Length: 147
Image (tube, rainbow, N blue to C red):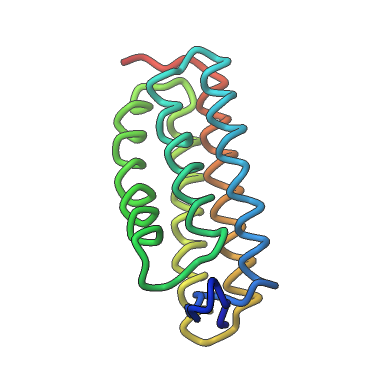
């Protein structure tokens, strides 16, 4: 899992055959952000917009010990708290929280398979995390959100 960049070898978290799929699904967060803006949920759309930027930056070449990875982890772990607060009284909050919980479970399973060095299953479960997060946010953006 080594990539050569300007004569410097950096070890990536996954092989390119795996991480390119996660990189591609990171683009979904832009669509979710735009949908949130379209529906008038500007404050809630900040979350997927920030996750889009940091995830795309990280997954283009996911080096384990890098500022890009740590920034992505910080954003992905902190912005859901803000988002959960923003959608607390939303019309579809319960559905969102259920989907988010299943996504969190998928992330844990992804980490399990990573530790077991089963990188295809790890990748698939990480993609499921991206899909569920975006589906959940789009569902909650489809209804009303009170602040």
